[in-house]
Image 1 (cartoon, helix red, strand yellow):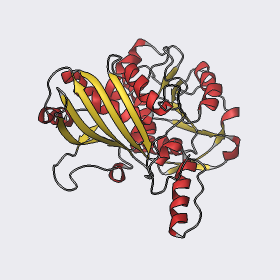
Image 2: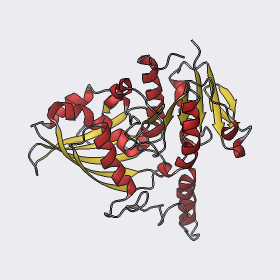
Image 3: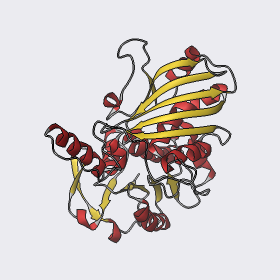
Length: 339
């Protein structure tokens, strides 16, 4: 079998992680093309024990490429994803451009991989928002058991979700504070070092930010449109790893012990939930890991059939690169891509 894969945006945070994860999982690609802008021409990126020289996206011919993993912004995706699909590749896109397109599947493999069997009309599959992806992995098995009625989620999102400039800003501001230099926000609206910012993406007319809207809209498309969701998304001074405090109200009774047992058996989930000092997972511990970690599983006695859970995952992995590679694996396992 020959399987040709292109990674678009190979020099960025998510693109590099896609290459790392493909190598870690021994993804059966016989050829991998690393694509980036003209600024990165000739730059090398790691792929397992190999180094790949970057090619220019604008000039690249996607003919013969089976799967194209896109990790670039919406503008470049809009120009090049349809071009790749027209050439015969199946595009797995990490941008927000196609997520709400009714003809584009929005996929978290542990939750709704079966939608791939219904056809990929445009040759494009969308990766969900990072904060949505890990929440879906946690909610799906509980929804199957007791049917979720309402979700209230507060996120604690790392700066890597804002890209390399955001990570640099946290580093530079932290250093500036220690040496008593002035702190000037650039990538963020306010100081991020030693602070939290309740603002991710643009504000919308109703007062929500677009990040909060994404969690609502994407939950409806991926899991169940009948679930009511309200979100508050917050940027925190952490380099990698998103955390979420999720309050769930169910239609049917479910207690914490049953929920814990269900989650222990759920795909993609690791339960670390001891009611003692340190008996839970934090973002520092999840960085570089594949799993979605769940801790602090407990009853919410303020409502009928309520639970609280704490969910942590590496946003560059399950929130982006890993999810995309898992979708690619689904395409192979289901015979949609044969190479």
